[in-house]
Length: 209
Ligand code: CDP
Image (cartoon, rainbow, N blue to C red; front, side, top):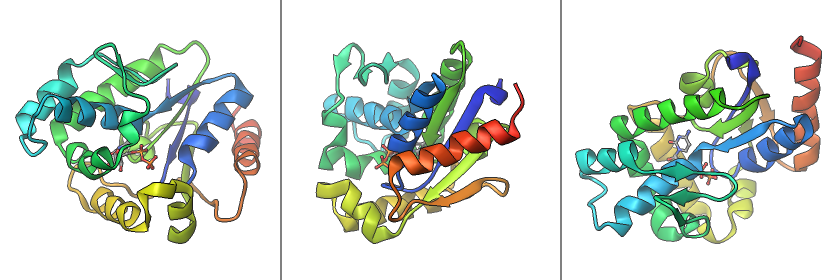
């Protein structure tokens, strides 16, 4: 089924979500923001007063919580779309995302969600090209300068963005890294539609069906 997946990875603020949404819209495919899933699990753990360093307790939430990302991000029926972008979650999410049991639960859900789509899915995150869909039809690694990425993240600020990048790239479980066969696109100074068109064109030129 990976022939119906476009996998996009990259650091914070590299343009993954906006570009993935635009590509999905153009193709009529579904879109999956896997970062929202890690953020929602983190929020649920924090809301229940669980210590995010308690790996088993956090994993139990990842394994049992009801999660949706579309049309809104919800966890156990509660709309958390806005809350998951708070400073508190920006800080905590990298710890939760480094938990191997949390990752295993998320990867399995992500594969199931993509498999249930009638057409195809544009999936974006940190380990999509390397772990979740290593055989995707198109594998993209988005980058941009730290200055521009921090600007796009607005209130989060450059220090927090840099700290998350460092944590995500150096963790033992599925670190953020460029897959050998990924197409690398630097989005610094480029607009979303321009990058999305390049990806759609690449799919049309290289993938038959
Ligand atoms: O949008 P932004 O790049 O700021 O982050 P995000 O995509 O919402 O992801 C938030 C956090 O979730 C990241 O900093 C990673 O720690 C984690 N994440 C991950 O580990 N694996 C993924 N596939 C997606 C996100």
